[in-house]
Amino acid sequence: MQTLKDKVIIVTGASSGIGLASARQFGSEGAKVVMAARSYEKLLALAPSVAPPERVLCVKCDVTREEDCRALVEATVSRFGRIDILVNNAGISMRAMFRDLDLKVLHALMDVNFWGTVNCTKFALPYLLATKGTVAGVISIAGYSPLPARTGYSASKYAVRGFLESLRIEHLKDGLNVLVFAPGYTASNVRNAALTADGTEQGETPLDEGRLMSAETCAKYLSRSLKRRQSKRILTLLGRATVRAHNMFPVLLDRLTYLYIAREQGSPFK
Image (cartoon, rainbow, N blue to C red; front, side, top):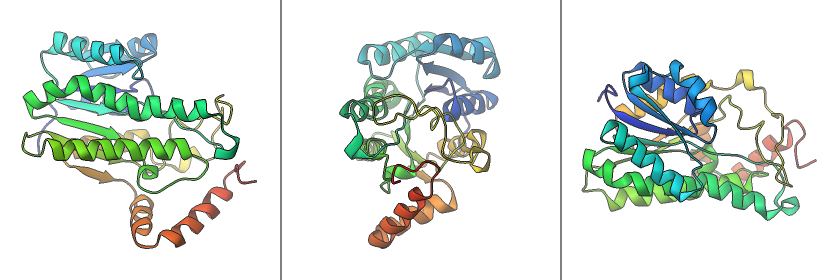
């Protein structure tokens, strides 16, 4: 198992949730952490909890903008001289029936979740190839098994998985590691900020966040997967069972998934 000490790691979506927890985890292991998010002032306020000033860099970055992603990579290399790991974590969710959905919501989901991953990876790739580093994508079980009332979210996570797995094969002989990291339900702000049918934020979560895996626990699993240079990690027993059932018993899983979502608080099915 490798160590993260002195590795240069970019984390997108680092201002909250899994991104912030991961930045803190990497910092605690001695990594040089680059925190990227749209909320630059928030990053600056959080940076002291991640690493000492000489080992952390905050960069304002909207991953939907190619020029921001290029600037993120350039700032990282200017400060630390290389890139060892890119964690594509920035993402947004949604909750609405497709029939009711304004298509701008799907465009927003794809722009952040899919194109954000593509943009950052494109500009970081030459440096990751030079260090034989790792590009990671934080997806979801919804990137393996479809999730109703989250059509745009599930589609974007499927797209990220397809992109990263294809990239892995392209560079099979180059020493590049590609990790597809799929947490199950994790306590975070993502459901509060999930977009509704008209593109406004949901403002509340339909789940009992206290019963979900913490972002800190998720970050520990991510750190372990990076140190082991794994190509795939699916978290939680339920997550692994869902992926297996999707492959082996798809019709049964469709029915079970429908019933599960129908029982959600304020379910769009009702």
